[in-house]
Amino acid sequence: MAVAPTIRSMNANLNHRKDTMKRAVLIPVILGAALLTGCGSSSSSHPAMDPNMKMGGSDGAKAASLVIEHATAGCHNWSLNGAPMAPHQVARLQHGNGITITDNDVMPHTLVQLAGPTATMASVDMASAGAQSTVTFPTAGVYKFSTKAGEDYTSGIVTTGDDHVLTLTVYVS
Image (cartoon, rainbow, N blue to C red):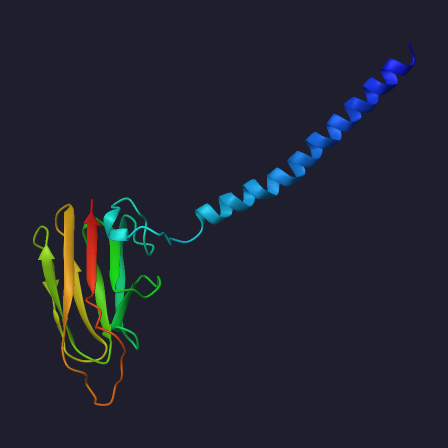
């Protein structure tokens, strides 16, 4: 009879070790997955397709900053609140607040509203490097913008591929 408790205790000890090893492996895997899921705003879906996607630190913000810069491939891109440069940007703001657009490109840009409630726009013709335009959103809704690019300030600037069409979608609550 003394053999049975020994076998049972060995099996219990072995099962305890297996459970401990499973936890030791699963905990780092689960934590790693949680960190990857929570970091950044990159996604394989197009941000303009998902109005709930948080982008560029502007989710429900009172103000945002958008900067247009030159790009060798595609001619120009813009960045929302320091997020990666891209031709398409999405912001979420509270009504009554706005975005400041700074043109740091090698060409002038004119800001154009394409859709949505009427936004209050000032200095839409950004005709020199460093020029700024401001847009305020008086009511809730979905606003869409683009820019019309002018000619380069200086000659000899080389770009590859088709010029990007800059688009901005702003979801205002």
